[in-house]
Image (cartoon, rainbow, N blue to C red; front, side, top):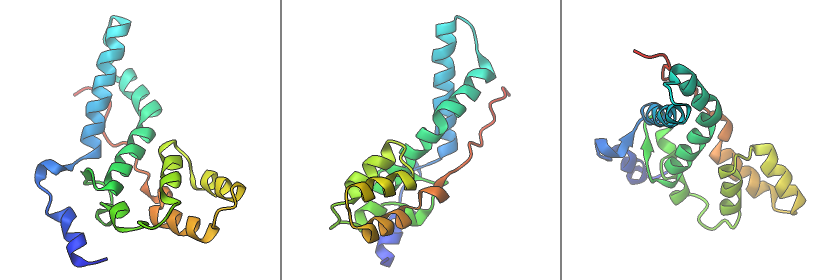
Length: 148
């Protein structure tokens, strides 16, 4: 990777650098408010825990894809991954369908089976999956659902 490509992530303004945990907590609070309104009472910590259980992994996956695309720099994610899709795989016809599987929650095995079933070049599929490294991008939700 060239030094000017690495610099782009570090030269972002403070507004462009976001926190997954802060944004996730804001999303969980919105969810709590909506669900509490539906129930006609404050659901409190229960609603926050529900959001974490039902939505955190999908929320994280979407933010990770934004990071890979160079749309939003999430400070908890690997700085080398920021904009990776703009630098790598430009000539690959496989990156878009693989990313579509990832967006839909597909894991490495799902993608490998799909590629095998379609007779796709497995070496290229493997290279893309290794570069994306989905399994090491999992982050536990760290905000505390208990009220202050």
